Length: 450
Image (tube, rainbow, N blue to C red; front, top):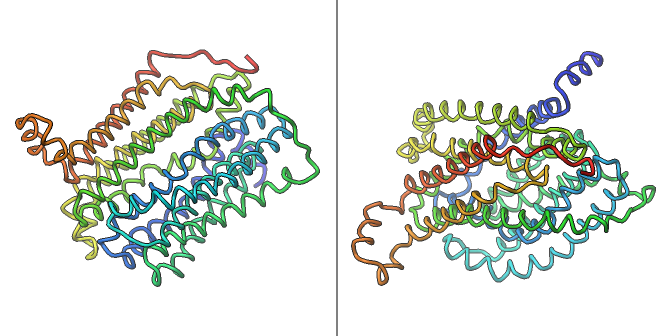
């Protein structure tokens, strides 16, 4: 049996073998997440508050954005040092990243206290306790990628699998304990506690490299390269967060409760096409990064993964579009959302295009290339600006010709269908951009110390 496993592993290669393992692990978690997202959470969170879950989660990511930007080069260079076998540098970089995260946590707490109430007012919710829960979510979510990068740099994929396997049932346990009594606060408390459990398991997996037996080695010679790597990444992350936050805040702030709740339900199903990428993503970046650092051509890996994830995701999106109206009709609690079932295929395909960009951008970042920012940042910012302007066009009434205002009003932009289709258009434009870049701009494989 062991011999057969090794033969299959050698035939598939490390990317597809570990992706298959993570895929199996992830499906167990997906079943639990579907149960919590579609049945458990709506049971204890009212329709009036249900639409606030996604923008609140996005707000937590926005609050942790400065720290995430600072930590981005650490994640890339952890893999780069691991590929070269420079374990002392891996330890030094991991240690410094954790110290930086700990110090930054206090800054996150400070500005969260002032910023969160402004967002809460627009999301139609209240509660001082939620502010601290969002802060805890932002801090713990910032730590997790660093530890994952340390695990992947050391090829500790088994420990990463344990984290993935444990996360969903642990979160379910906390939700069952806290959601009935605390509602929205219980939801985010469960999120923070499950993140803490994931951090504990990850620290346990890294216990050997963090021990005194391995010395730290200076990586000062890499600082200039790390700064060059960070600047374009910062722009990408800021544009992505501005776009995502604008989408979710507008849906919650400017649409009726039933439409923001419908978006929540549809988004739970629309994420199903992402399952293949969620498994591959865990090992994709470190494997591409290592291959690039050794001077190997990584284009074949990229094309394989894109064809698999986009092709498979598109088939799932079509199936969802055909079956979701029937499903909403079967479950009595979902009847309110049946009129919005036609948006399912648009949202699912939006996620397919996002997966394609995530795959491509991860590949390019692993290869230290950032040409895609030339079209990604303008499209993302244009979409955010257009949604904010059109759904809040009343602000421009004194400044624009009446005919323009009438044209905008005729669009009826403050409705879920309009916003979902604008999101689809922007992601499709980005998808076309990456296809054109792959076809007409083919960089030569480099590295191996150039």
